[in-house]
Image 1: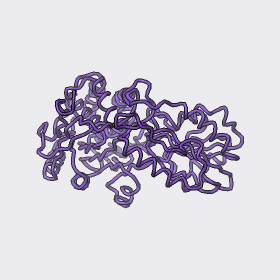
Image 2: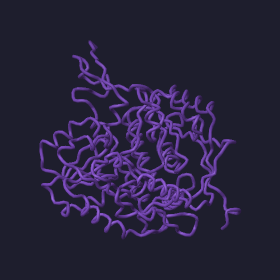
Image 3: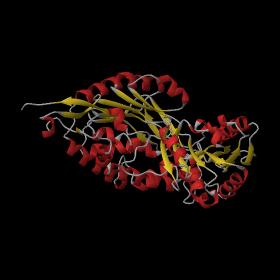
Image 4: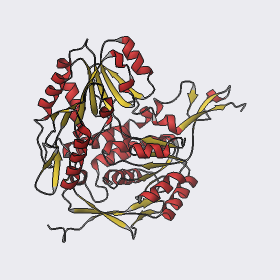
Length: 462
């Protein structure tokens, strides 16, 4: 079927009064440039009215919210939503985002599990000594009550990975009404999730999908009580100092290997940390720091990664991300400008591998910066790209700062203590644990509830 005869999927906004097909829209293409969907873009007046309706609405009781989220997880994974059965949803997300289709299918399972675990994940953040409701008997003599910091949460979502949409489910569980502004890079997952939540029992005035242009998205964040905003360094700087905005930027996850550990025994975990999730997630390792000569480790990583096949994203054996050829070439050129004096064990000839259909696979890159050039290890790109650098105890924790996940292959307890104490390292995994590992009740970048909730003193005499 040609582009002129194929009908486009309609991704309407989902406002407080139901589905809304806007006059202004954007055509969403796949990685080969073929149009796939038409995304409605709503104006600021529509977002303002929707946020006002969400703020005026009252949340359902907590047990009902939890049960509805669990039902939504089942629907998300198994039901036909927005005209798309699960397998068709996976195909379209893969085609548009360039993510391997098996990865998208696995993300469906992750989101389903997150919906089922939402009560446990939320309660893991409950402060010791606090209760969840003022009518708890513990408030009679007096105690702390866990309370929302606001009523409406705006989520300006990322499109690099479907899994980002597991986090804001916790806000719904806590009684927030949520307005999601989807990424135009991948709007299908949040659209499907909001449809599932509404079918599972959440009212239209409880959770909304508001596709907008960038200017209107800023207005949405300002209109809500709190906002989660995904983006790069520019976004983080823009919202720095605003206590009502939680920024989610680059992960810059890392692995540290000290001399008392033989990296050859842990090569599987190292490579998996780099290449799992097609190297697109914030929890993928973008740097490996090793005490001693990094060259043998870099060569071993390159030997593993160069075997990965270049395939279209919807191929069942695909493991690398794809994107439009011109965009891939631009990214490849950017990497070359950043390589400088680094030694390229993989990727010296570029990383864009044209697939002949207007798209290109992004091949892995393995680079070794010169000794002390730690600024390069902070370069994070959306494919398996890793900087393998030399580290010594004299360097301390400095090169390891600003890290979402740090896997520490070391038996040095004093060093581990320093890593745990470092405020800019969000998660520390000691031993044979890949950086992308996640367990129920384990925070991603602190608990989301640390941002959404506060404790309030409560005492009753009746």
